[in-house]
Image (cartoon, rainbow, N blue to C red; front, side, top):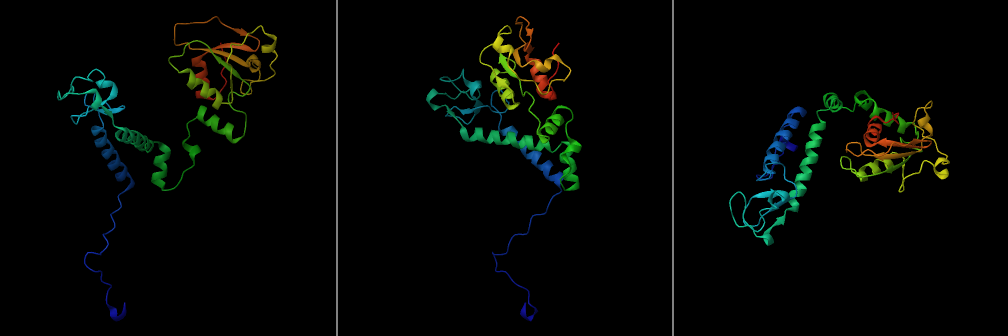
Amino acid sequence: MPGGRDLRVRSGNRPPPAPAMEPAAGAWAHSRAALRRLDLLLRCSRCTNILREPVCLGRCEHIFCSNCVSDCLGTECPVCNTPAWIQDVKINRQLDSMIQLCSKLRSLLQEKELPGVKACLQSKQCEQEENYEIPQGPQRSRLNREQLLPKLFDGCYFYFGGIFKHHPKDNLMKLVTAAGGQILRRKPKPDSDVTQTINTVAYHAKPDSDQRFCTQYIVYEDVSSHRPERVRQGKVWMAPSSWFIDCVLSFELLPLD
């Protein structure tokens, strides 16, 4: 400045000093500690687990999972015995959104423990993902996509018969669609000429296996005691749901015994 004088800032307008930068590891540790403290505040006053559909009873400050107080509505708070009228019960939507956000933050902090993420933090640059990739199924899936090859269930049709409790049927059908397969609404008939003349080939079946020409699978849930009559005729095969899940996890059209 002219005259060699330093620039002066009027009292009250001086910018605050920049906060000291903590090491990455320290920042992550502080974040985990803060999240643990927040978890303690987001717990049900009755079951002590993380709140699910949090509700308040209206006349006290206690918050519960909706299922935990279904037997208390119209009576009293199970903690402080304050009357709990049905008309006062409210679902706390804002708190529910906060719980969902904390769940995402928790997942993010856990990802930091993965070897690949640790390597990036240490080197302060992006490392090659392939060096830390989960082998087998996930790796095969990535390579298949990069090479623009057909999806896992390309050329396959699936009919889900019976009741599915362990793996919901809707979820299994979504997996079929995502993996390039087709859903059959009617159970295929092995002795039907139409069924046996469908001209498709399962791309991901082993080339030397007769499963390569199987195009339609009748899937049943093998976790239950129900065991349907075994079908393995031409292009129609019976398959347990555990086989289907194993195929997805390994990204292979596994052989059927």
